[in-house]
Length: 253
Image (cartoon, rainbow, N blue to C red):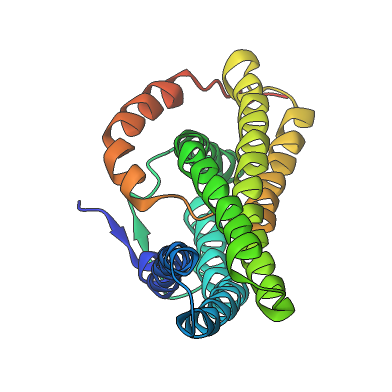
């Protein structure tokens, strides 16, 4: 049976907006560097361009977070429950997105999110270097703008400061997100593999794990790199199969 994931199409508008934001970020860097090297009336035109870019970047980010990304993530959460409990909640189907046949729906749901947490931990960790580099570039652009371009143009300084702040916030959110996911994953690893699920209290903890994992994802709104996922998917899937085989579930307790 081939892999099917209807929900993936819901992420396409968000991916398109993310791509636009990346292009705006590149344009902001280029224009800032150009503006630092030229003078005269050209500066005023470049200043307008920088203000427009900052406004568009912030607006698109807000629209993506609040509408496009939220809708896709909401559908993914619903589908995760649908798959684990074999209950129809919407029209979207996913087959072989999760490959964990446990039997008990509560354990299946937790195991599916444990798999997701593993992939998320690995991919977000690989994204850190790029995020830090982007943070540094944002700070440099802000310094260039304030030092060489603004000429006491308060509006430009405010716009560029907010723009850089959004980029810096994204990098900081990724750093915190990665650490929180790593910590939660290690706790789940201890319960599911090191100790094994055998008591009612542990089953209750698994419910907490599921809620906490989805809460972290919803709060930090991190978009995992699709290119990294495609590059690492085979390797991570192979490791996951080994992890899944080590999960210990007792029917008692």
